[in-house]
Length: 299
Image 1: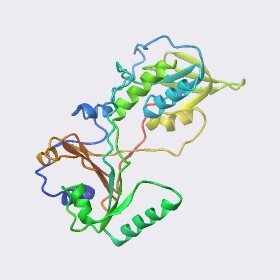
Image 2: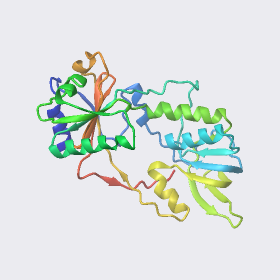
Image 3: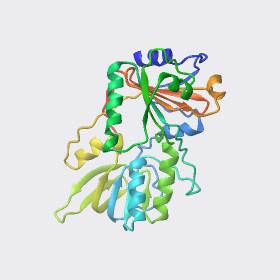
Image 4: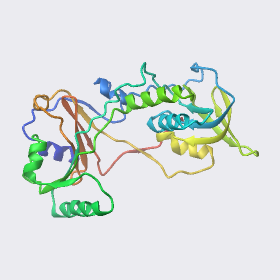
C-alpha cells in the first residue's frame, strides 16, 4: 500500500482515479490491449485437441507463452524440423502474420529522490565506457517537461533511456505463434503435460492427456509452472510465483489531453512503475510483503 500512496503523491493535477482493477491475478478484460492478461484455463481431460498429436518430434517445447512461441518460431525459421509446442490451455491464433503487436517506445524515466539514488544513476552512466546505451541524466525541470503530471519537488534528478518501451504480450505471442506455424512448427492445445520420462536410448517420453510424444530435446518454457515441469524431469528449479498486483485506470482527462505518450516511470524509492495505458495509467507496486503462491496445476 505504501508504494501506491507514494505514487499518488507524485502525480499532480490528476483527477480522482477510477480504478478498473486491482489484482494482477485476476482477468482484466478492460481494454483491447489488456487481453494479454486473460487466462482461459482448460483442465478437463475431455478437452478436444486442436489436431491429432504426432508421435515423434525433434524438439518439444512445453509452454505457449511469449518465450515458448518465440523459441518455436526461431527454431522453425532457422530450419529445425519437427518442432512441437504444447500449451496447457489455449493459444489464440490471429488472421495475419504482420499484425500490430502494440509496441510503444516512450522511453523510461528512472527517478532519484535521494543522494544515494543519484549516485547510483551516475554510476550507471559511468558504465557507458564499456556498455554503450542511449541514456543520460536529467534535471527535475527536464523531468517535468517529459512527464507534466509528476510532482518534482522532492526529486533530485533522474536518468532517461529513450530506447525503452513496452509491448502487448498477447499480440506478440499471437504473432510468434503464427510465424512458427508458417515455418512448419506444430502447436497443440489444450495439451497439458502430465509427465516426463528419460529413456535409455537418450530420448524423452513427453506424456500428455492426449498421448505421448517421443522427443530428442525438451524445452521447459512453462513460466509459472516451470518448477513443476522441472520436477517431472528430476530437477528442482529455485522458482516461485509471486502475486503481483497492479492498477489499471479508466480514462483520465489529464492524460487524454496530452499531445505525447508519457515515458514509463520507475521509482526505486517507492518501489513502483507507472506507464500510460491508452488514456489512463497502469501502476504496478512491489510491496515488501508480497504474497507467494505455488501453482498446483501443471502446464
